[in-house]
Length: 414
Image (tube, rainbow, N blue to C red; front, side, top):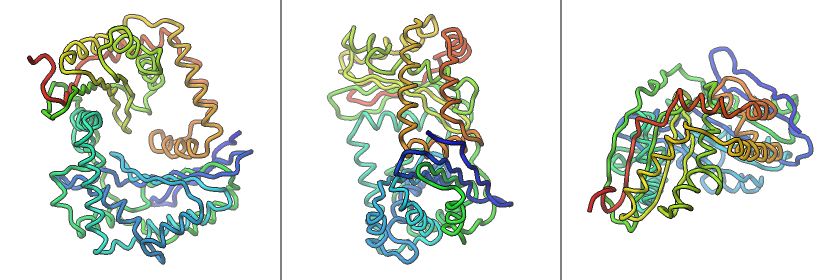
């Protein structure tokens, strides 16, 4: 079981915020390090800068060369991954608890002193390009990337992977400038969970990140504006039509978030969900259909996907929209009970996962400025009732849709 998290606030003037949560009966420790250097911070017309920066930084830092840095992490047995989101550059990792300090020292080097050698830049940019070409070859992923771009105002809808058309404007100097301006501890968050002793770990973390320049304060990108509805089609050779639908929802920090989450889970949580049952199983309209609740810090969207044949695309879209709107007309108690049971199972698994808990610590601090305990989440889920979920749906109805299709023709065309 976890104990109450220990929050180490940043020094006066801003700095790295650290949240630690010891977990008994585990041998591992995990961390989630969020740096405010996501795609929304990129210069306009330079999509892919953040993705290039992450790869380039990992090719050597401090006393470690390219191969040496990766080998050092491998020797410590780190299971790691990196990503870019709209808000942040994120580094996640898990290892044996005894190795955690050594791992954090390496990430301290990474953030304080990345090499960014010129000769490594070309393969970095080629890697970004290959990732983007992979999206172009995957219409299912492309429709969701492009839907997100359209349903959030710039810069919040910018694809985290970048933009093929922008790559020629990304240079070694422009990425170095981005790193110099954005890879700062101001606003950064480190969540750590697992077999740790906070009293011992705090000074070790301070030593690992000592000397990380705070720099001058920088203005954050403007918060998202109004939701833009509409309908658009992108022509692409494909044997299928890929349908994306988005509509406004509440963000994670909103008091109604759990009601919004329950509504989406009833729509798309498992094989007994509304969309699977009505769109795929009963009518056989598509091979894949789902909905998910997506949250930025200040705005939320429900994002939906359906993949089907050209002949059935128009009917699939019609039925999908009908099911989204029909949910507000009534929910069966059994539907909500299944949703709550799934959530409780996930909570039990989160209690046993240091990686899940570390990510939750950092995410909660970013969105809420505090940490929610697993018991608090459980209480919020158990407090949900059919009337509270329906009340949310009537105040935040599924409407003003942003619809995007990708395929050989727009739905409804002969």
